[in-house]
Image (cartoon, rainbow, N blue to C red):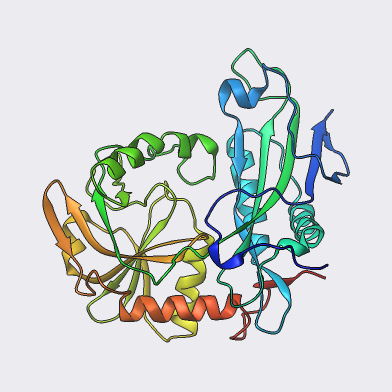
Length: 341
């Protein structure tokens, strides 16, 4: 398929309608076969479960053009598995994981012309999502659901280099113990909007959320996991049952150990030990790693040795290695890369 006439180098991180999207409906206890459609409009009842009680979940992944010209997706099986976990927690029917991966591949292939060329820094963002579609007025799970996948080309997250950001310790809680922080539900992101708008108004780029129980341990931001580098080069990531299991973070921890030979550790990270780390980053699908230069705790500044000018040395190695795998410059572990054929 011929590439669309898009100024790839000036794309932002926003929505652009593409040609096709995948749609499957769950009714009478079963998913239908699904269709690829040009219709980008969703028509549901005014009383649909998603509108009344926020019964919706989603995923996010990317398709890339590799150095040798192939179009690939990165670890879609993990997105399928995580969405299944999200569905179970919100009493929604699981969209079969093998069908999820197949639908992602179909949707990317149908929008091949929107996959940015190698070297542009841009990618095709893929958004699978599911919601309760039938009327629900009593507080209960819906009986009917719709699973959809759309795509949109997005620009490089860092334009002109990855400058370290400044974040604040949030006064708000992101997730409660035994709550829904470990799944990718729309309701988790809705509650973070006020906190992030407040942070931006105060001049910060992001929030650091602490555990709701004791407010002494690091959890995550509204949409990314934390990753820390100790002064002796160990890679540490917070452990908590209310953190979303980031696929990027899990991949980076593997890369740190198996590709770079670094010691890794997933453990509880306490607020009062942040000043002991040399580097800090936020990891997620959009940016891979966003370097953090400074954390502000109610006026007290915690500055990392890596500084505010550039990505820390170890963080940069992690970033370069993982993006090298994604873009085909480095050999990938078995099963990580799914080629779109």
